[in-house]
Image (cartoon, rainbow, N blue to C red; front, side, top):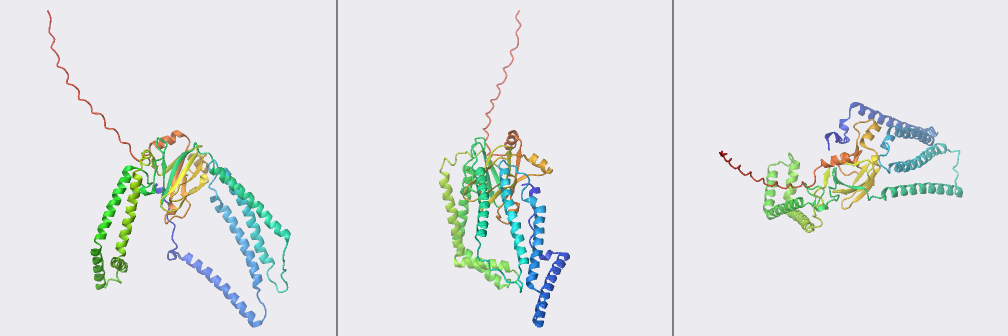
Length: 456
């Protein structure tokens, strides 16, 4: 990921960094609230002393409802004008996007009208029918006509929206993918990697058991898997050595704790003292050894799993050697694709807003989403008037501290030749071994020239 693509981390709530204008504004707001509250207290006390009603809280509540309604409608208008553009990121750049947008607008239209009507009536009724001593509320027991209206009308509207949504989703997810190119997208905290099949058109097998620092996708590659096995065995041996020397470690930590306390350094270095004390207590209680044994068991189980998979020749068939693992996704306009998603650690959500595509990435299982891009990156830049605009695949599920920066660039090119040129520049998972050049035979020495003999 380029440095320019990195998004700044969100600022934490830090009142100590507020300037004087912010502090004075908040203080003024708090003061106004206290004055209003005090005024109500004075009014209530005056009513008790005089026995006369001065201010009707019911009428005040009614007017507050009207003010709240007006301010709320202004807020809705503001959000629609200034933030409504973020609901849809321009025109859809995928084949199914127009249908998706139509479904969204129908749903939004119905719900928005219902929202405005119900909220206006709700706050108006609070004002219009606020309590008065000279008026008694009407007890309205039952009305069949109203019951039928507010049951049938919502049922019809919801049936229309649900069926339309179901049909739209069915068309998107059940499209014919026989001619679609498959691309694997792998999610991890906090980034993405994409994998393209090599010249054989087949993806190599994978397993989460094979995941390591040098094999982040867990591909079935002999060298990486054998290296992982050796690393695990080395770690197991190191842990077993620690278990064997546990008694000596317990004595060392106990001596450090006694020395630390004897020097009275607990208050000066509380964090260091806490760590030493915990280590000494764990060593003495046996928790330290149990933790080591648990880690040995976990790593040994992983070694056994790897050995079981390693014996499967069908899995290690070298089909993944020519696969290309990249940090950018390149697509061809009007070419259908199937994105197959995997996740390494927690649930992520692959979100491509311009293509109206989103799918959860779940550890331990594969999910997929198919679509066809219909607008190149250059066309999108021209449409938006921004020469630096790019498509991105984001994570749309909060997955940790750096979730906000989890994205991978998507570039849509105009033709297959551009795509092939880009793919040829990407390194395969395993670099092909070049055959050694055949030795060149030394040239035979030239025969000595025979002197010419003159014949008389």
